[in-house]
Image (cartoon, rainbow, N blue to C red; front, side, top):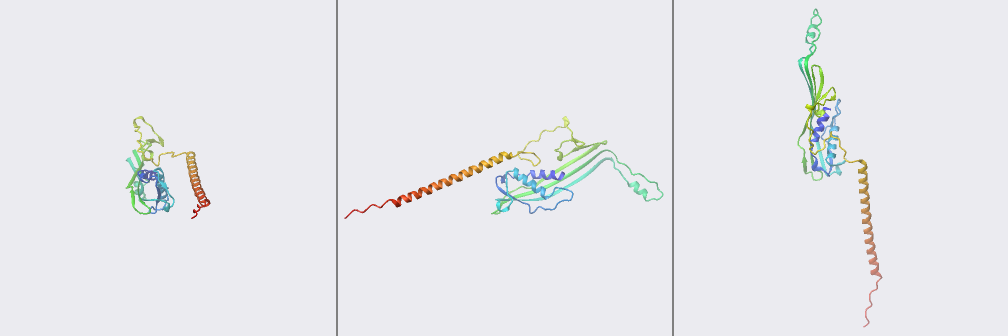
Amino acid sequence: MILSDAVDRSVDQLDLSPLADRKVYLDTAYMSPAKGTATFVNSEYITSAIRQRMMASGCLIQDKRESADYILEARVGALGADSLEVTYGIPSSTGLTQAASLLSSAPVVPSIPEVSVGKRDGKIGIAKVVVYAYHRESGMPVWQSGHAVARSDAKDSWMFGVGPWTRGSVYRDELRFAGGNLRLPFMNRSPKVRTGNLEIAEPHNFIHPAVLEKQLADAKAAEEARLAETAAAAAAAEAEKVKQASHSEATPAPAEPAK
């Protein structure tokens, strides 16, 4: 979840509005197709996230390179996670036990248990995505994103054995206790201000399928009516030409006066 949240936050930084209403093909040739053994976050996930961002930005996604007017090329500069653990007190140790085992006559010494007043586990994920676009036929560059770098974290804390107290960007910076949301009046934050860009993690209904189907049907019917009207006008014009030609052939030429 750390890596996927970092990828989503990184892709959310891409402003693809210059390519809105344009036919765009996403080129992922320079994104490694290798899959991790212990994670679902790979090049396929990043590709899908970018395609979702393209759709939300109004791009007309094309499945074939030849049918697109612009090519959007993507690459991943960084994708990784790390963790750390901090103990406030005395950590557990087996050093004395191992040292005593080297002496055959020494009694068995138990390991020292952990004696702490607090403990903290932290996980950090980072993702860096870079994309740029160019015109397919001319090869002229039209736009580049710059470095879209995002960091995601999650922290679990215990105080005097009570916990975990969980917080981090993965949980939208909300404080949780033992897996559930903890709502305290003095810790309520101001609501997030919308920037106008739709985030990947944000639910949104673009259009109801029934409304879309009706719009497509109405557009198709209007196009068919326009084509039928154009064909009827062309047929009427052709019939008028034939009628005028037949009248000119049937009219006899005036006789010359006698001399």
